[in-house]
Image (cartoon, rainbow, N blue to C red; front, top):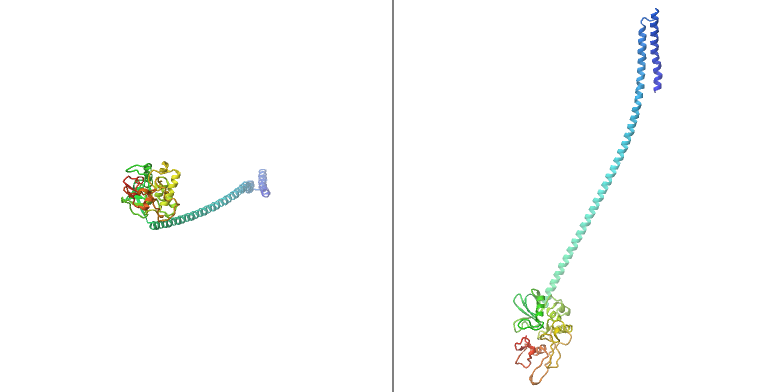
Length: 379
């Protein structure tokens, strides 16, 4: 392009120079007197002007072209930069969109996970609540059934629910309603008006077990003794079967006293429902040397296991205990000389004289009068 412009501009400029040269020559000739043009200076001026016009006309495009080249390069560079910037912007936009999409996906995943966790927790809570409700209902039903069974057992076994107010001694207590209860079938050493060995220990044991406690009392046959005390068995809890040896051992306090050597069995007919068990338990305690049996084979108070020196009769209730309410057939007292009746113990005597005998009676023996009131084996 530049060469083309130069090829055009040079001839045009030459024309201007030529006009100028002609003008100059005409002016010189005029000076010599040869006039070819009246005004040769006009040619000179026209030549100069033509030359400058032609040079200026064609020089400007060249200059513009020369200055346009850097601009083109600059624009090209700008376009490259714009292209790079656009590519970078596109890349950033794509990365941003990708990041936003990933963030959205993560948020959705977290929301889903949270929702599932909440649903799982809710289901677990509902299952737990249901299980607790079922367990509660089951426990309530069981408690209700047990209560009903207990009430039925209480009614069937004629038990009475009472509260112990105070303990008088090992085998006598007073209820909160004022009634005095004498434990049936057992006898602990005395610890009130007179003192027998191991009496205080028996009294303290009964206090530790019964004071202020709610228990169940049961009548055998007799209601009261001659002192007006209620004759009762004491159950620490309601038995499922009042003739089960296991239940008697674990729940009846009368048996507990005998098993642990705090009392001897002491049978007064017709209250003989548990006499065979008490004798069996006493033999176990005596064999182990528990409590009052540590002081000898006779113990420390009167009872069914006392031996006699005046008769060859064996101790009562030597057979194994049997769950029967009715007493075994009574043994006849052994005959003796001089009209004296000899009995091995109070159990044997009561089979003939249920309420005991006074000191004037032929069957009276001082060893059977534990309270020294001149009345042996009284109820």
